[in-house]
Length: 100
Image (cartoon, rainbow, N blue to C red):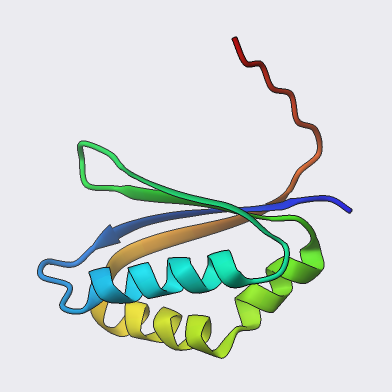
């Protein structure tokens, strides 16, 4: 099975009430899903946020994508929290690593 990596780039609106709590809940829910591998979020100096989420297969990614809690959070995000976002879903073709 090929891993699926989602790159979620976003900018928040000013004062996104309730965002932090929901983001924490969604991360916890993703981590509890079968096939979850990793979730990391970074914020750039210019305010852009980048989250990288990895699942072990297209099936586990699809299950997370369709989770009702996740869908509700996405809708609220569009209505209340995000000024803009971009989602890229990628199938892992090759992986190399090095550890010293």
